[in-house]
Length: 113
Image 1 (cartoon, rainbow, N blue to C red):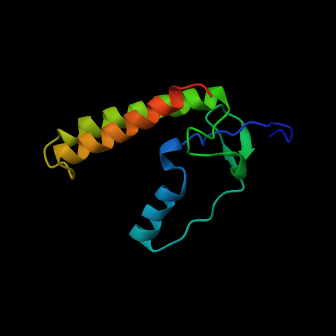
Image 2 (image 1 turned 45 degrees about the vertical axis):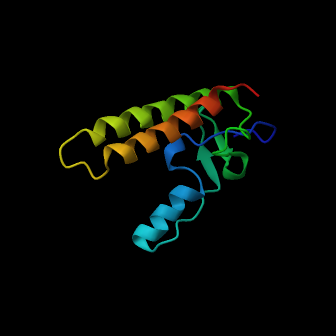
């Protein structure tokens, strides 16, 4: 971890990052997970958690932006594929909305700031 790295990164597990994911854990398990002090980023660096963001407009590391773009597209494809399986826990409409949300976010990550 470099103390002089001025960039804002994304966590490597971008789909499991941020307050929304922690809120799902809290509502599911009733446990509040601690935010880590250091995380592995999409570009492979170890960075302070405070130097990461799930918001595309805040991320300044280009490699992390590319990583987040790919991960959101992968998530969209996965949701659509899983929704077509027998016994899927989400409807086609729900999956389409989730996939569109992920694609919209991927598009925001692809725009260089």
